[in-house]
Image (cartoon, rainbow, N blue to C red; front, side, top):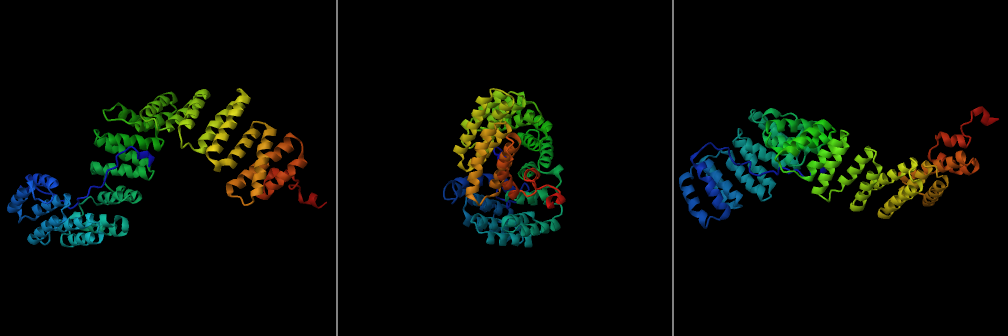
Length: 473
């Protein structure tokens, strides 16, 4: 999603099977062994003696064997990882982490069924070990969320002190099920939530457009972890998207003034907060700063145009709107209409009426050329704007052309019916009210009645609103 385009989303790190180790003797050497295996996965070179010495000392320690197995797992030596798991089980058949290690091997081999089987074994034989439940739920988080929840509810029952709601939310977050993640994050105790989980909570809220909650979480996280600029950034984004301009500005200023590395998105959100609060001159400065850092983010140019419009500087608004449409290959039809409307406003205000009228019509022509599917919209807009600007003959020319095209087509979609209804209403009104030619107006109003039987103006023009007694005389 665009709002988090420049945020680093936390990737799910596999390895729930790694046991929480006390300061056992092996913990001081397993890091060296793991590093050696990373460079020598088969332990045929430099790692060979290190592994041999480790096994000689710790072969009867199931925790140490799982630690060595995880080192092999990280190096993708699955056979040796299984051997280590089996050695651990041989010493303690109820040691859940050994079964989890075997499940992790199957998971990394993309065999979810066998992985789930080993995780289930861990849950059964070592019911106080939360890692089995979490790993099992991770397997089912996409294929069967209900089964994942069942396992996690078992964990809640067997290990009541475990932060189950937070970790359940994490499972659903990593699977992209943000709605479900939010359900559990909202149940969790935010006061003791880990830094990484707070990040997931704020991002999940952002992903489901719950900007109020996202801001609340990000503010809490920023308070607890002031050195983490990601939380300041998340508070700014949620504030801006939730139109909480004061908080948006406050956190933007904290971020901009910090030592954190800034990017164009930071200045864009700051500018949007400023614009939302009506501080358009400062907003323009920040939009320009954002565009200077990323010359492909053309939306800044359109935003600058909008701020100049709000300041009443239509010349500058036009300058940046034209620049936006010229530079942006993906400009939307609605954005062409915005530019045309600026010229139309000038016509209405009596500013160089003829020249600005031609410029507005030129914008519509460019729109039709770039997006042929908007041809009927363009025809209607040109006629409608002529009608609004009291250019009656031009309005009749554009609108009757559109009416004839639509009637010739026959089978109209809802948009086309809307164009036909409004075009006939406006042409009918010009003939009736401006040209005092009701006879010419009537066929257009008859079409209006076909499309909108209760249209009061058409009924009046056609004499269909007369009292019943008059109609029978």
